[in-house]
Length: 239
Image 1 (cartoon, rainbow, N blue to C red):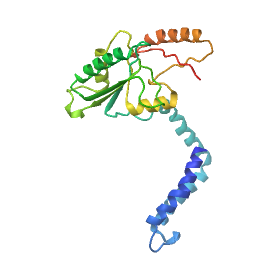
Image 2: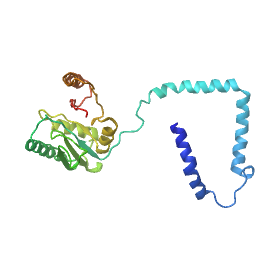
Image 3: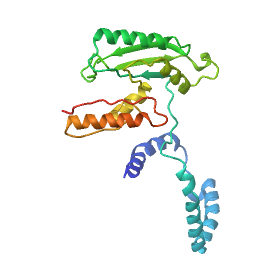
Image 4: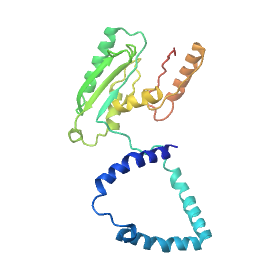
C-alpha cells in the first residue's frame, strides 16, 4: 500500500512537472525514435527466448532467489550507517531529590571535565526542565550538549567512540548513571520509543512496588551484559 501510494504520488505530481521541464520541441513518434528502436531490437530476442524456455527461466529465477538468501541474512536490520552529527549529548541521571544547588555544582564539575578534552569546542549543560511545559524533567536529569572541533584538530587516532569512552571513564561519580547519544538522534529515539538511550526495556503493570522490583532486577541483569556502558531504571506513572 505504501509503494502504491508513493507511485501514485509520483505519477500525479512529479511526472507532469518533469514533462514541462524536459519534453519540449518536436516530439518524435515512438517507432521513429532511435533510442526506442534500439531498445526494442534488443528486447524482442530476449523475450522470445524466455517464452521458448519457460521452465529453464523459472528454474534460473528460483536459483538466483535461493542464492540471495544467505547474503540477505547477513545484512541485519540496520542499513544506514550511524549518523555523526559532530555534536555529542551527555544525559546522566543522578539520585532523585537532589537539591538545585547540588545539581548545579555537579553540572559545573561535569562541564569542566568535558571541556578539558582537546577535541571539545564548547559545552552547555542544563539540570532539570527547560523553560517549556513539554519538558517535565526533574532536577536529577541532566542534558549537556558537547560541540566538537573539526576532525582535523583531534588527537591522532582518536575516534568518536573512543572519545565517548574516555569521557565516560572521566565522568564516573557515585550515584550518577551516564548515557551518551547525539542531539538529533536522542530526539528521534524519544519521539519514537519514549526512551532516551539506544536500548531500553519497558516494564508495564499496575502494582508500583512489583514494577519497581522487576525494574531493579532488569537493571542488575543488564549491567552484566557485555558492551553495556550503563544501566539504570526510571519509574514513571502514566496519567
